[in-house]
Image (cartoon, rainbow, N blue to C red; front, side):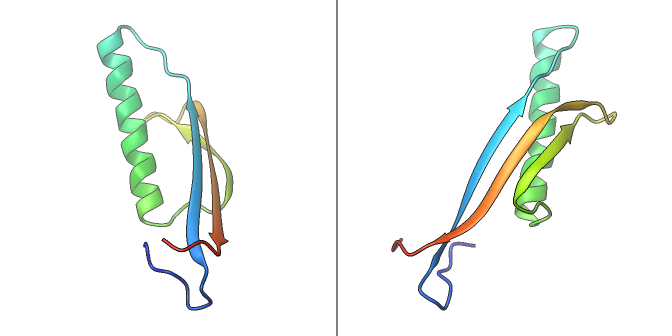
Length: 78
């Protein structure tokens, strides 16, 4: 949410994603990468990932990278 906290602090999120995807052709690796990013977006939107590093897997469970999230607060006005 983009609401300021009651203490005058504004929430922030740093998100770094690194994926390495290989496959039989470019169209396939683009599709697989997009699927992984959509799954990550859904997890972020549902607030399922805490601050820190998390492994990212493809749809068959093979690790294809990592995501780093840092949930923070700052005193800056929006």
